[in-house]
Length: 171
Image 1 (tube, rainbow, N blue to C red):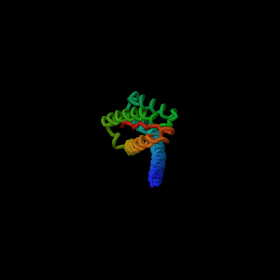
Image 2: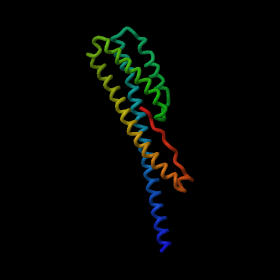
Image 3: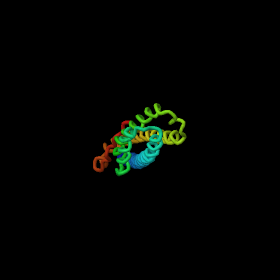
Image 4: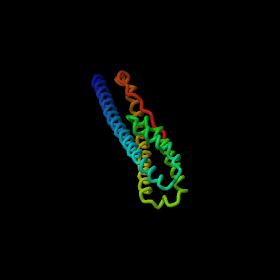
């Protein structure tokens, strides 16, 4: 009777371990897909920057307001972004420059009547909004992953083959 109880407990523990490991692998794959989507959205957003600059240049004589954004665009193009953590600072700086240009655009008469400007501006805002949504979803997945990882690492097999902790992203 004792052997059957121990065998049942052992089987239950193995099933729980397999379930947690399977769930961890699913979450790890989901995190990788989300990170890839964020990187793709970032690249699409930065691809729109030259169009925004060219449209705004037609309406202003002050070319020096675009210097920082053009520099950030060049860095975004030549950098090989393979991780979400690599692009966070760059995306934040690009977004701040974009917001600055939007404030400047309010002072430029006729710019907000230009359909091309409105189209590009809306695209950049759309991509930034989607990046923010994806980062929030990524953080939820990372939170779930880390919670499961800590449970798995409490087991003997988890101690021998630990999963590394994922860091959340601040928005």
